[in-house]
Image 1 (cartoon, rainbow, N blue to C red):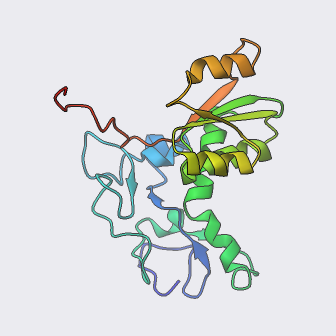
Image 2 (image 1 turned 90 degrees about the vertical axis):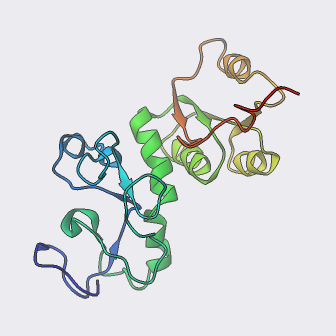
Length: 203
């Protein structure tokens, strides 16, 4: 921490901190419900919720991959690290974005030991959700995507891969779960995902 504003009490200059990429105030209704990714205060557009550093339509906040970063609501958004922060900084940086996003997906899905979990999307967040589901004790983790390189990575961490460009993913999940279906699932494709052919005229 290089500098603190007058409204910051807990974080001090010289503290080692890690910053999640999403920005939240800590006191609105959604933050009180621990839905900090849908903060009502940090998002300047009244019809939207949630804010993030350098992320499309999520507020006028500069990107997080920068030498210096202005952090609103510093006491809430700066996560103080322990005495080993300098020595383990390359470990702690994993707490800033993708890994906790994937883990949070499994938290919101309620993944428990023995669950059969399906993850939609095998990008970085989806892969971290698959790994997190395994860490949380899921007995079977299925990952749906259509990119061979991503599916290979998912398979390398022990997930059952489902290429939805070649098979019906619903049927595969039913087959893998003796017709019961998954106990829970995580949507890790992202809300910006779209069908690249949508809106184009038929050929």
